[in-house]
Image 1 (spheres, one colour):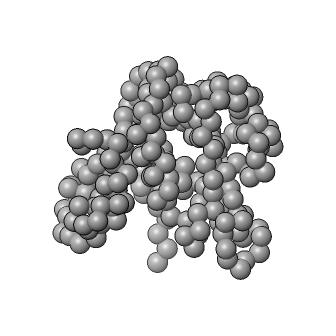
Image 2 (tube, rainbow, N blue to C red):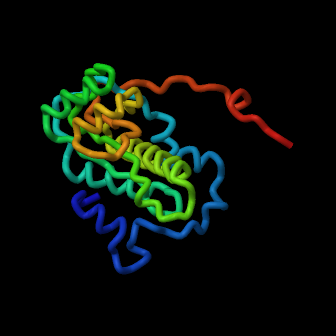
Length: 208
């Protein structure tokens, strides 16, 4: 990549379809062998990602943040309405307050702190409010997951914070939107090896 700052233009704005990185047609996917699929970048990212609680005191480049935000923006959402908002916390005092709102987990005070919030008012569908709320928490969760994978692909690490006092978080960042999670991102002090997972035979329940 010759100029990282041009990544978003290449993702979405190139006028010639053959020059655009996203979206691309899916032709040829069915011809890939299983070994080739497992060796593609996205599978390596998913297999090697680990939660990281110790970050270097080093700023994350703006162009990397742009890619992380763009990845979150591509996440699937109910009806395509994107029922979530992201709060990028730069203020150091607010980061410290968020530590207290997250059960005093010190790693919340990370180089990059993103609070993913539900915004059911964006979901313009004729369903009961409780259903729209469920859609928006799913939207926010998927967006955070996409952002987390994008961060790992850029040589960064992250920790997903789900143990939060929602009211305290809302008061701290000054919003009436209910938070679903906090994603903390930075350069890892140590590269961690992936942990073993459950056997697929235990994970998958086949109903015939």
